Structures are given as C-alpha cells and as structure tokens.
Length: 293
Image: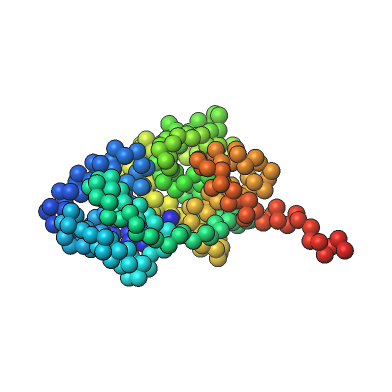
C-alpha cells in the first residue's frame, strides 16, 4: 500500500510536551495490541501527524479537527482512498480504544478503489530476475516471486526461518499476527545456500545490511523498481506485484485456490478470489461464441 504522508514528509512531527507524553503512552498501548509491526508504525505516524495538524491537546480535539485533517490528506497531500482508510483506522484506534472518546464514529470516508492488481507475465518475471544484480538482489526478486511473500515478511525473514532441505519457510507473526508456511524453489534453495556460505557479514537475518541489521522495505522496493526499469517493463512494478504474479501463475497452472489462500496467508477466500479475475491465460481458454456459429 502506498504511504502518501510518509513519502512526502518523513520528518517527525513536532508536538506539544503534553501531546508528546500522550504519544509515548499510545506507543505502549499499540505495542501490546497484537497488530503487525508495519501497522503499529502507521498508526503511530498518523496519530502524530493528526496532532501536529490540530495544534491542540488531544483531549480538546473535536470531530471537525478530524474532518479537517482527512480533507488535508486528500486535497493537499493527494492521498488515495486506501490511505484515507488507514488514517481513519489509525485515528479510530487512537480516540476510541486509547482515549475512549467516540468522536470519529460517524465520519464516512470513500470506499477503497477496487483495482485489479498488477500481474507480470512469465516472460516479464524472467526479464525482471535477469535484470536484477546477481547475488543478494536477484535472490530477493526470486524469493518474492517464488514464495508470494509480502515485502515486510521478506525483510524480517531470518535464516533460521527457512528449511532448505524441506524447501519450506515459516513466516512468523505475518499480517494479522498469524504464522504460516511458505514454499521455496528448489533452484533458489541451492543458490541461497551458496550465498549464505559466501556472505561475509554475520547476521540472523536472511538478507541484511552491511551492519548485519535487517534489510529495509525501502531497499527491497528500490531493487524491484530498478530491475523493472532495466528490464524495460512499463507496468507499475512493486514487490507486491511479485506476490500477485505468484498467485496468478499458480492458479493458471491449475493449483487449488484454497492452497493458494493458505500460502498467501489470506483469512478470507474472497481476498484470494481476486486472482480469478486477473488470470488472463484462463480467459484465453474461453472460446468466443462467434467461433461456434
């Protein structure tokens, strides 16, 4: 999901001492809420951004202040409906759950746009992999496509989370704080084994920075973006496009959609059903009624 606010203003919003203390306690509240790390970061960021915009103590904020901030995000920041939904959820948690003040209850936001996901053809996936720099970058691109991981899940993956002998991996506390098993490519397992043996930096993470800390989501996004440009793929390619392509190609290969649901970590089958709408190869198999006349 795009992050309009963070992309345009990464500096920490300055708050009054009172609100700063409140945010400290809010951080503790959401830390024990059970949400994913990414969700926690977003909730805290948007609550902070709202307080910086309102310029008053949180307990004095009104419904009009929230409407004003949402309008600011939409009109001035150009935020998408998906981002507005995340802002709304963040402020609802902040006011309803944390402050026990129901001032956001009746504020309506636009529904998220129902866009079909970007899916690469198999030839485009091959070109993307070939365009990625040999070594770590190429292994990252291959893992995203071959396992259907979310970018944050890949960034948090530890070496101990993959079983190269069984060619499986385990995502710990993924979206919705759920664990799940992923599949690993046979060829990728051979390549990552050699990569880890040659890797000079000791780290618990499968892919790390030079200091041993986990690779950032931004770095993975940049790797995909640069590879797509080099491969001259004109679609909007992101790490999530690899996940979409993984699911679609499995479906086109005749794999059971329930198995795909489990591999993706979807709680609801309806979420997985989107891939039945983008499977171009399956649509090509439908015979036009004109040919039957």
